[in-house]
Image (cartoon, rainbow, N blue to C red; front, top):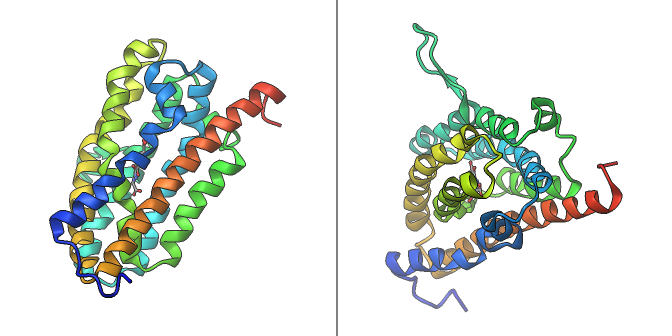
Length: 248
Ligand code: AHQ
């Protein structure tokens, strides 16, 4: 059916993409509890420890896109995403370096009372967390790189959730060292820059036919479902810990 429909205009296509904001994980009960300040310290620590698996997987996802992508101009922009997370030495002469987002997320772990080993050992990561994140990474490895680019567009909605944490945690969770919020602060600019690139490409590439535009919406819904399933996994794993005691 979509083969005979005319493609949406770029404005209509972008509105369709942005219209999926209602499926974004900011509306998940766990994130609504986070914003309301009703998470226990253990639940907040569980979220930080589980989300670390997502954070360390993002560079693998982006490296998969680079390895599949034959367009040098795309690669020149996309590689910045790996550096944002892994960090790099900025000035070889003065030895200055950017420790990167993964290190900042470990700092978030320390700020909520976890040890570096609690976070980096991954021993607190629930099986369903791994399944949700691995589904995203394997999508990026196996699908055409153009589809993996489109899947990153859940970040259309990310600045809102990062800003929400920056605004609410100091009053809702005053026991958390505010230095730990650095990760969310740096993502505000990085996410906006990433989305500008990913959206520009997606609007151009997927606008060739209505079927391609519908495929882009399907891909975005898949990634929205990954983030929703990730929140499900974290919320349930915390219930299991409360019922069973410490993680077996
Ligand atoms: O910290 C996040 C991040 O680095 C990324 C990369 C991007 C992608 O390539 O899929 N998505 C993403 C997201 C991050 N944080 C999530 C959050 O709620 O803290 C949001 C998530 C996204 O919206 O996709």
